[in-house]
Image (cartoon, rainbow, N blue to C red):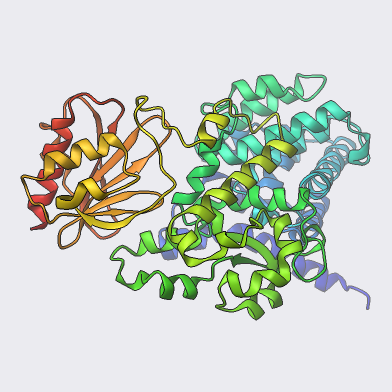
Length: 516
């Protein structure tokens, strides 16, 4: 059926109405939005003709991949001669529009052509290099803009024309910026800098781009291991499902229904809990756990999530892995699921043995497919579970459940520094319960009032007590305060050496008093 001019106009208005929603959101909901959205709205109301029609067409084309309007328009504006900081300044909106209107038609056609080609190549790169058909998987779509800049300055017609070194370097850079949250702050400044570095380089300037990153230059085992302490199905932790999905496509994993994950539309897949949620809640008695966030982490940490076909996920329902994984084992091992059936039991999950094994398989796959990004010189040391906080401290795989401080001598697998702290608590109350879990050790009387969490170079202690009470007590360890989801005030204490542990004991004692 032919498309009428009236229908085309309607489609254009639909696209630009999405831009103009910025004003509606301000007026009705008071939602804070960026100035880029305002610029889009201003543009929507002032530009017309071929420019508007071509922008609409491009947005509609990339909408099928869930690429948002903002990175598309940032790329277009950049090619039209506007810097990212210019776009973000409301006082310059009118001047920006005038500058765009002043571009000669031939030049405008050329610049729009560059934008269209570069954004299509960016989408093609995501698909061929990472198996990503849908940009919703990305922690940040802002990272698409420097990619578009690179493709815009090079006259490639398809990504097969890219130099091999550029392809490798772009892959490494794209993973790092998404895993590091590089564009989570100072977006305009960082984009301007990165765009200029790319434009002024003959090839993709990976080392220069890497130097602009304010955090880690590589991803280590501890980063992946941190996925055990997060609910990775939450939007805020999307970086973990992003890298998991990419590793699955690189590993040629299928959807447990006979098709490669890379061939599926994201809407056809579901995040599958290897140990189903209801199974864990029942078998581990998670209804008795007070903190909902803790339950979410136990159930939806990185080790327990993978992507499979929706109908298969439905058929598994609430069966335990020991009951259903056998029929999928040849496929499941491509999802980094341990083949050892002893690890498919509730005991293995409760003890953290399954999680340990799968996290290591995930990290080793990351090292295999992206050796320039996933580098950990201490990984072999970590693999035998040594903790760098003094030679005597060992991080045990064995989890012991609950025990009172009175019977502390019978507790296995608790780090000596923590044992030393707990021994000092005995005179306070010998009935304090020590609960040893995979990712933490909690102390409880009537409710949990302190949590120990182990990192490779420190122990984090979180106590349920306000920072202003403890700041005069803890002077030789780094502390910070926060508000919990339960409305209570908490204080985090970093224990980086074995000195001044009496301060730590006093902080725990204050938290204990507040819970009595």
